Image 1: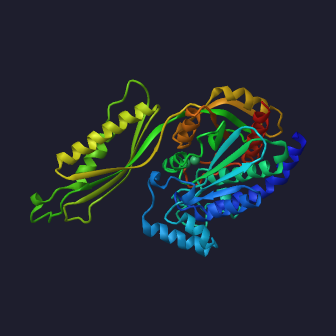
Image 2: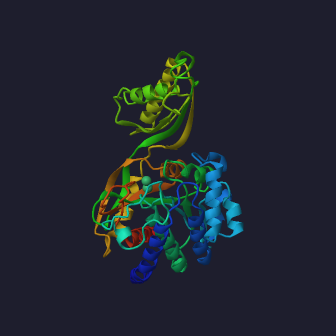
Image 3: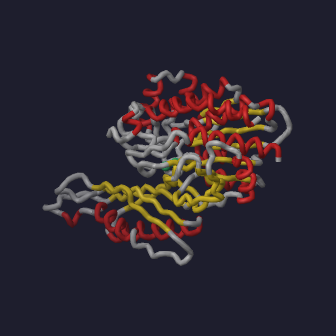
Length: 434
Ligand SMILES: [Zn+2]
Ligand SMILES: [Zn+2]
């Protein structure tokens, strides 16, 4: 089967790279992946997968950080203009994007699930000709949106794995569930697919990330460590405005409350059990120079090396947010806009992955583990699979990175795409034989 797999990979590669560039041109940020979902779904239907789209694929009530209605409507209009049919739009209406694709070989065997995240970021992509997507004509066509984390690559890796399952179905057994997850950025989408129950009876769960470490394409990691637990919060202070010259004493200053909070939040006492993080990434307040500010809003996040450490950070942050509101006699509301927990991959999968990927022209080195050092909401999926007795891992597919993730000049070596498709395909082949 391996010669045939190599033939399959070399014939697929140019197709997948072309598709990756197409997704790169049309990035869509969290909960607005209407066109992306439609394109994925169309292809998977052709390959004989059973498709469940949008509202039917997600526990809608679990969604976090959904854009406002006007924003969603304008994105739905954009999707309509780009040719997404009304019946698809109906299923995704109101920011219910993403899909689940199932394939049953009809033969007894294991249930394998794979997750691919599909969202872009609100970043203005560099048009500098030193940036390969700009030089080669596939830079984002949408001002202010960019695939700056490699999820365009993840999407086509998912399509490549689907092609593999379709092409090799006679030699496979059991069933497959491919989750094309919206809204990974900010830790907002995974939980909605978990709570819908897609992962409740999975034997093996695989996912992965392009890049993370700037190493040659071809180097992969069988497992990932150091998933940071995180909580994203939106904080709104409401005070009372007043004339800053005539009667400042009648005002309640929301701007000062937020400013004080932002400094004190950075001063949360370190924890003996391990590393923590806090960031105030955005702060907006007030309406004009001579007005006591009655409004302030912050976007903040906490992280911890364990779920408990992050909980400590959240509790301290909430205490400081409330204390600064009291200090300035203003009201405050906090809303959770995203989360991820910390998890451990199943190390017992390392030998299987090593054995599966050893004989390869493109996979040059298999690390047992590499650290993530960031947060990934795939952690909710890994956790659910493990709690139900399944095995789960998150691979890293190394690539030289001209600039880091979430940077306007982020890019990866496209060779990582066939490498990842090969790795997933071989792990699937080996697992069902084991
Ligand atoms: Zn990212
Ligand atoms: Zn990412």
